[in-house]
Length: 94
Image (cartoon, rainbow, N blue to C red):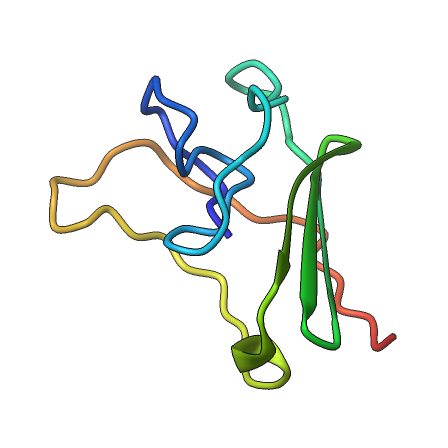
């Protein structure tokens, strides 16, 4: 799930699942310097992403029934850009 994207287009913007689920609406991100809140629910073959209280995508794909997850910053081989920070990460079994 994409947690930060400064690109102007919405295709795989913040809140999208890159290469799998495009965002349906304008990204409801908070201004620079303010924290964004993500709720990512993976239940069975369904993954739902809620960004700052607004559902951005819902994906159903059996290839995601199980497996690991990770928090990662990827800049696609470019020079480092903005700082990405995580806080209050919580994982809860459904």
